[in-house]
Length: 305
Image (cartoon, rainbow, N blue to C red; front, side, top):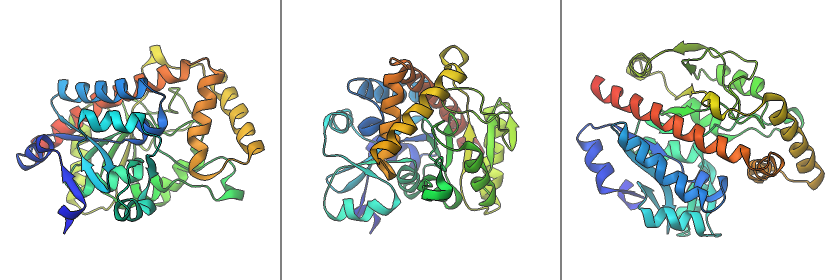
């Protein structure tokens, strides 16, 4: 039955059957998160980094109503260039599949597909979370509920700093999702290494992290983990400048009445403009950094199975 909806790339399928390390990658960053041609260049380079660190990359997306676990280069290019690719989270998956459409998977959407395929580690830029002003709008990303329910470890540069990071961490705590700092005690805020908030636990190596992940799932403690991996210091943006850019972008979004899943792409585009493109370079470099850590985690996990 699952084969009707899920198509595995031969290299990914072979790696999983041979207990080799595999790292899932999202496609929203390709279709909606970055401009062309940086989106293609980044997607392909991330895959290279994962291979260089001993794992097999599996970029996930939906093509013609089929969940592809491991996109080909041609499919990645299609995702990057097409204007018809739908942003797909949990609620959207059955409709996009049934209608035979193309879809770029969000953090939540990618976690679902990774879990169906048996992939334990997923690398992204930053997770979604509780939006600023959520006490009035109830705008909370589906990523958080997915993290509470789906057994995938998510390596990220923290939560996007356009969010209410304090409330995001409170939500994760309520749902029992461990927030781990990889070589950091402070939860990273995407563009910056500091957020003003602490992680639950700090780990200093991929081996230690893999032992934690294995223990969690061996004990049938349902749900994923958030692994906060700070952006490299040389690519970090100035804390005050980025926060001012975010505040200005949020104010403009409110004035224009932009809401829901259109909010994040709009804000990231505005921040890129306000920071003269520096935020895009930071975004690219933090994804590369996450890919290195994710591949090492997947490798260590494969040794424990």
